[in-house]
Length: 215
Ligand SMILES: [Fe+2]
Ligand SMILES: [Fe+2]
Image (cartoon, rainbow, N blue to C red; front, side, top):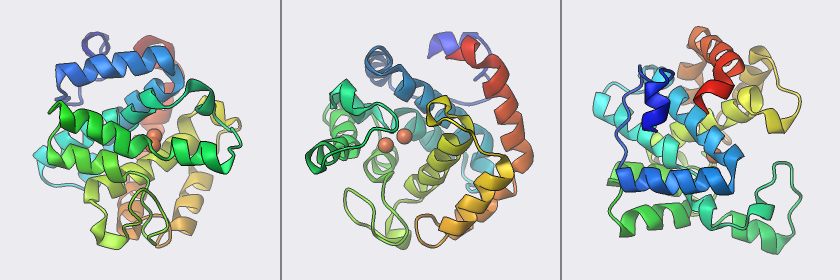
């Protein structure tokens, strides 16, 4: 991550992540580069868009760290199960779904993250309607930072992730977020992030033109 900061693309985003956690992230990069690249984009999006949803700068720091580390648990999932667009058997899907808990436990056991960051990691696949995993939490029972991460994750897959094939326009992505407001996503967060279309367009440009530099 120091290399990323030196290269300038993340200089405007404050990153406070335990150095041991960053070493794990480097291992994730070796094992599954796509997940690593997704994690870096998520951290940058979190830093650039957090003010739409959060007022406390400390919460922003936790959001950035959490987004950077949210899929760290995938380091313990077999790489052949992490290929984008895979169709899973029930057993394979149950293994992939372990990654939020595995990541949170890894960081918790070694005291590499605080409770806010751990809450984001553990619950980033919960849904507003309670149909997510691992705990089936609903509404505001889902930690706020995890609810934000969940919407950013969807934006990343629709707008920035090359492995998802045809990327959507921002208008299409916003329609999809609106459609899932109140079922998958917290409608308040969707609304606040959609007000930052200008910044999302800047991120699109950054990821399109500097991708090879900072990842
Ligand atoms: Fe993710
Ligand atoms: Fe995930």
